[in-house]
Length: 179
Image (cartoon, rainbow, N blue to C red; front, top):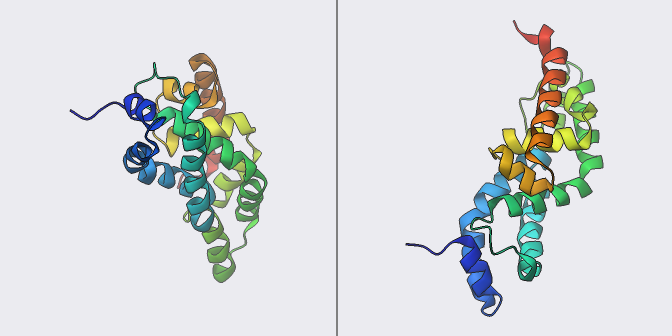
C-alpha cells in the first residue's frame, strides 16, 4: 500500500526527493484545474509554482490531513488570484466578443473554456472572487464542499452558500440561452 500524502510530505522534510511523489500524484490534476482557469502558457507556470510553493511550505503541512489534494488546490487558487485581473479581463473580452469568427477564436484561446458562451464569460467575470473560486473549484477541480473549504480556509457552510449564490446568478443570466 502506498504511503499517504501526509506521510510522504513529512518524510520529504528530511529527504526532499520524496516530495516528487506528491508532484507525480497531483501535477496533471492541478495543471488541468489551472489551465481551465488561466489557459495554456500561464497554466504551465502557475502549476509549477504551485508545487514549488507546496515544497517550500511542506514544513507547515498539517500531517493530520492524510490527503494533500485540497491543500494543493488552495495554493493553486491563491496563485491564480495573482492572475485574476488577466482572467477577469479575458472573461470580459470574451463576453464582448462579436460574431467576427477570427477575432472570437483568438479571444477564446485566451481563456481555457474555448467554447465558452460570451454571456457565461461575462457572468463569471461579474461574480465576486470568493463565489467564482468556489464555483470553479467545484466545476473544474471536482472538489467536495469539504475540500473546497479546506482549500480556501473557509467553512463548508460558506462553500454551500457561495456556490448556491454563484449558481443562482449563472442560472438567471443564462436563462435566455437555452435553445
